[in-house]
Amino acid sequence: MVTLTLLHPQASTPLAKWHFKSQSKILIGRSPDNDVVLNDPLVSRYHLELRAVTAKSSHRWQIINQGSNGTFLNGVLISREWLPENALIRLAREGPLLKFQINQVTRPSLPIPPAPEASICHHQGNPPGNLFCIHCGQPLLVQRVIRHYQVLRILGQGGMGTTYLAWDNTGKIDGKPSLLVLKEMNSDMIQIAKAQELFEREARTLKALNHSGIPRYYDFFVEEGKKYLAMELIHGEDLEKRVVVGSPVAPREAIEWMIQTCSVLDYIHSCDPPLIHRDIKPANLLLRHRDNRIFVLDFGAVKEIGTLPGTRIGAEGYSAPEQERGMPVTQSDLYAIGPTLIFLITGKPPLKFWHKRGSLYRFDLSGVPGLDSRLRQTIERICDINLADRYQTAREVSHALAACL
Figure 1 (cartoon, rainbow, N blue to C red):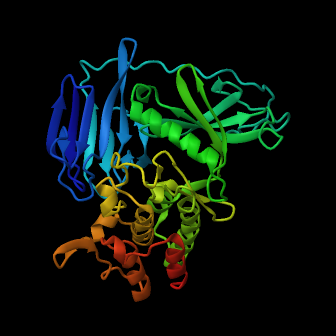
Figure 2 (cartoon, one colour):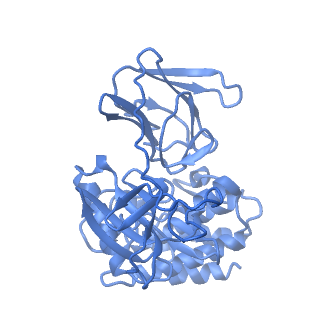
């Protein structure tokens, strides 16, 4: 039996409890059809899912974030992780705090994880944490081999896929052995047609695109029923983690990053037919360490303009009104630049600044300290609820932001 306890944020005293005897999936969020309903503005409608994963005769619980403001497991921002006993789960950085417990009497034994494959290299004297041997240059530890890709470690886990750091020593990429990102579709997604479509769409889109702000496509294949996508490794950190783990950034820096993002959006919007990303948000914008270059990630939600309305895709707080209705246009991507700037500069979820002005709700930045009037007016125009009143192209947004520097 699983017990979830809502704790007081300061005193850590219990405020409410939920018991689940036989459920294998627990939904948590603000919408009333969740198993655990938390009426807090920082909580998304469907914020996270707890899922029992069975392996042989035992099972473990996973936590899967779906909220736009993030989920923290024992203080660490996560996408998808295993849940330890007595785990503390916080919805958003300043949101509700839950304690996860499993009844000790009925708690199943945890499966023993498979041991990684033996090291390729056995030379002594390598510093702890090294991926490659300082003597022969070979990988020190290979967890798995998928075709000719040697998996070195997990980079991240999301709802649809797991990304690995992999090594390709065939020299097929630029004529030399290379580190790369290998994305694997999760096993529980294989039977979901929509998930397969999105995964394949990302591969097709990356293969067709060529821009310095988009990771390069290397390979797409199916192995033992699972789909894999190999792409360029960018050494950096996404902007959501940059702010959540660090601190808000100066307006000038945030503006420069969004101007770079506009360059990528201008490129995909100029394709024939134009492409709409549909999921521009801080977590999908990667900052490369060596030169502060922005890369746009996650092209699984890309949609060609003019196609029939489809499933609503987009992060809460970052989606334009027309995108919420399942009818995105290229300007919908530009709208997301506004909430992204709000998050980068304030460190707070954009919806904290979503207020009623007159008869309609819109972003109100009048109370943000240190934000000059010109930048405030530019952001408010970028994410105006009326499509006709916004900037119409990525170049217009870029020029307007450059004028704020």
